[in-house]
Length: 227
Image (tube, rainbow, N blue to C red; front, side):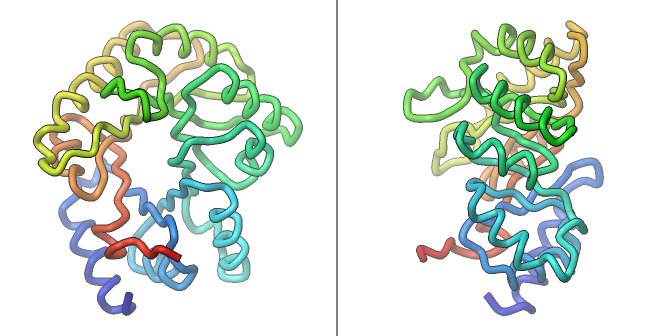
């Protein structure tokens, strides 16, 4: 994408998002030049689905200053990628099991880091999607809260990918309900501060339902590259 077009897209989306909502630019398959342009024109958080891709872009921006922004893991994290993930990311939004949480905690212990995380909810209860079942979120939160090198900061959901974004509202509402209930329970070392919901086609509805983090890719960068 031409730099001027990307600049305009970034500015347009930023004007549509309230000041209290963090825009995470979902940069999967995007070039380092595109990521740099997005940061230059106001993006303060970059999200990656894959650790290896995040590492490549991080290195490409090293001389320019990759620490100008927050780096969020927004894709399913494999246990064997935990070591590199805790070195690269400032937040992992996709903790959905004890095994992944323990892997992150163990690697953070080695480098003396405490990792902010979100618990990913499979709000649509879809067998082909990652995320903990809404029925099991409380038990996972209680367990993860006891891990010394992790701090739970909220919840995240993908929601089913419907053509009509209005149809995602029930899933956003369910996740917000769980968010509020967990906040009221005041679990030790858990802060329900962030609710990450909504992507390019549904961020308006997600914000309306209580999201304060949105993950937007196509709306910013255009159609995803296939290479």
